[in-house]
Length: 92
Image 1: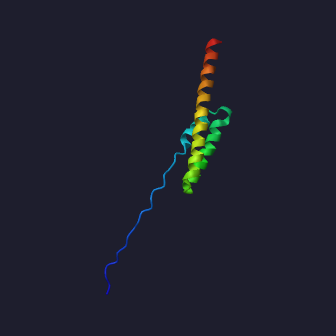
Image 2: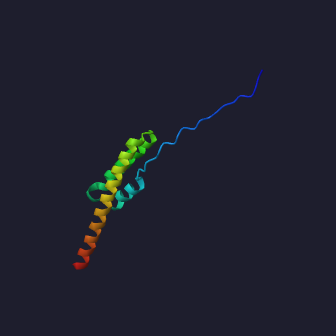
Image 3: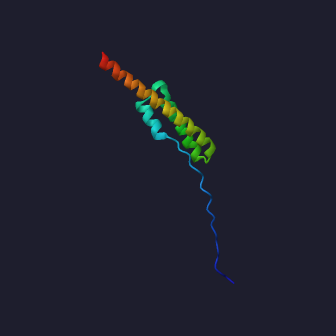
């Protein structure tokens, strides 16, 4: 009358996790922040992380790409600015 209970568990497919670049954005905010690009990148990185938690990978990917582009721009401008300052100090 009472047989073994058979249960099955189907794992959902893993949702792809786009990168959010929070650490890179935080670094740029602290050390390479020309025109506040690092801070703006940090905001987009946090938005990307929020969208990942809300299981919206499309929006997380969009915010993550924007943060990546802003981080690249901030890092390049920060390096150029640093080199120019060093050259001006040496020439002076």
